[in-house]
Image (cartoon, rainbow, N blue to C red; front, side):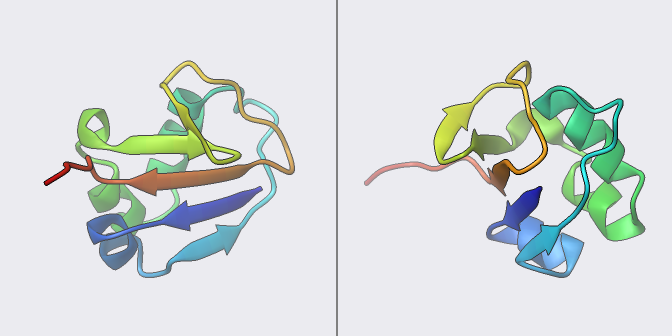
Length: 83
């Protein structure tokens, strides 16, 4: 699984992307976030306010219940506003 982090999430995690194997008990975006929070203090800080984070799975906007699978690209970013 390819994970991408943008803006302040990238700063807190300490990298813009990671390639990680998908744990067998991770089936949704919510599960993925919960698992990521346990990886490091930076991940915990990045996902502490998970409700305010937006996500895309394979470049399509996703919600917390969206399924994830091995080989997916999952991007995390802060809320976006237009101007």
